[in-house]
Image: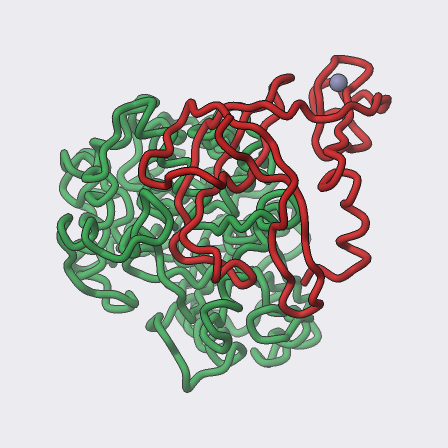
Length: 390
Length: 130
Ligand SMILES: [Zn+2]
């Protein structure tokens, strides 16, 4: 297997992009990534998209978008794994380059969520849960995460205030991200006073509905310096794991087993431990999700994740900054694009190009992207190539 | 959308609570399936879900999905039945302000929703305080 590097990243402002179509949003991000890498071709491309069908009535995205980019007849593959579609599209690109199937590969993600009303968007997102035995009974995604939150709170003493602290931290981080959808400071009081959605979760515990796309360019590490002027960022690990899709089928509803499994594989591949990480970009689709994820990644002991945001451990300047980009909470969550945007952030941080939100001396970065209530997780670890002992 | 055929297919589970016990390791599955995810056995014996359970976790849905708008606010929980089977269902005929985990519950047959597009009246199991 060949070693793989990321040589280009692209993303535009996320938000309610009423004037832009699904294909336009994607193509802008893809062009930005290709231009950033400085390559004149890509040999294959992968598109993460959760539900082009339900959000805009458009499937067959591989062919459509390869043509939009002017790269036809290259193979274009659409990848779906609910909210982990972007991370999984990147993993497919890594495998293609590592295997020697293709040299220059575009990995991308897109979701256009505001062409439908709130009810239709909620329905589209709910298809990531068990339709017959969860959604049939009237549960929603906020409701599923609320039930996970209640288990964590009752078993470990995690407080309502600690959930709010995650939103406060990620919105503070997002203030420094010019592409974020919600660049606004929020206080714990505002989070705890926002509209109740599914007890104990409130509106400001939830990530938003977002239009957006992101893209990155990969190639073999040994070709990176020849193909691109950008400092290469090495893909040190790529791991993927699954769990039961229905929350009620899991032995422990407060344990993200797929994240724990994928993280263990990734640390082993990279030859590092959680202590070596400079920062993480994780899937904070709800405030409780970040708490569960950092425990599953081994950043805190099990049951201790609740205190991490409020104590400053996972804040910018803390021991292990989590979501320096602002996370899904502030940056936005166009579901298929989220996993790719996390990787863009990791690459910028490791190049030292993250501007005001730069994590000092960043060398190792981890991205964690998950689908549904955690039935799919994709974990990647990246290393600043210059910092590498060969 | 829950059309008539899709609805009809799940009737054994929603009306009669039919589950399956793995002949290899004894694990009970609801709904029944072809392969046991504990021992990969492929032989099962039909069983009926126990109808007494305990509330493991729950939420109060304030913002309801389509088809449930007129029911909000309502409680949905994960209920642990005997045989270690857990199911997701609404908890009804209870005080939403005092509902708590550990509550003993009993399964009842109720109307769950009316599908807006197909007009199908959807029935199934809900739980009430025991
Ligand atoms: Zn078995």
